[in-house]
Image (cartoon, rainbow, N blue to C red):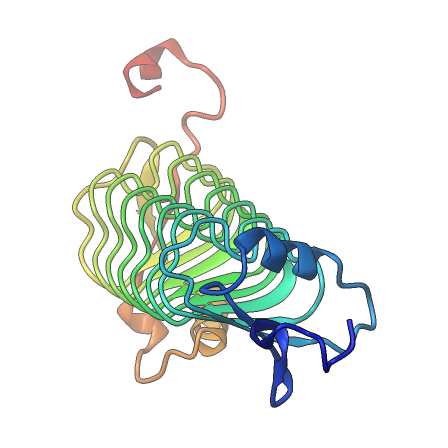
Amino acid sequence: MPATTMPKAQREQGHARVFDLGQQSLRELNQALHQLTPGSNETAWEVLNPKGSHSVAVGVDQPISVDVRGSVGYYCAGMNDGAAITVHGSAGPGVGENMMSGQIVVKGDASQYAGATGRGGLLVIEGNASSRCGISMKGIDIVVHGNIGHMSAFMAQSGNLVVLGDAGDALGDSIYEARLFVRGKVESLGADCIAKEMRPEHIELLQGLLDRAGVTGVKPSEFKRYGSARTLYNFNIDNADAY
């Protein structure tokens, strides 16, 4: 579409393509993002007036940046594969669900099951996260600057969950091989989740995650590590009450 006839909501502002959801539909936004091809020069996007819309910027599969100026509803940036998406507000349930790669930053709080089933990439929540943060995570790295709710990292298979604040009840319930690092207090640990030694390799790993998430003034030595006791990998009648 020639620039002279392009709707105002889609015209470039500086180097970013601006999409105003107060003037255009969410379907149009996601369709435009999905139509991007490798090598496209439309690498910077700005989304205005999200007003709690659901499924904003889902399924992006190109290495672009998307700045969402406001709070969003559920499943924002779900299935992200390579994009850098920043929510300048809070996010509803399932932000970054099934994320594959790239980076998602939520400047506010996140509701339940943030980063659920995530397979890769980095999810940063600069506020608090609600219950089931990182449920069934499969390789994603999640850094939460605040607190997380109950049942976080439930059945977490791989990846890293870093919490600068406190964790709610049943942290890491039925966990597999994900690594959990919590700086504050843990209300309780779930089935088969135990405290583990912080070895030098974990200090190095955690420092790298803190650096990537823009965390300063915090030392890895201030965290405790939690992970699987590996007693539920195979059924044992003696552990029946824990399954």
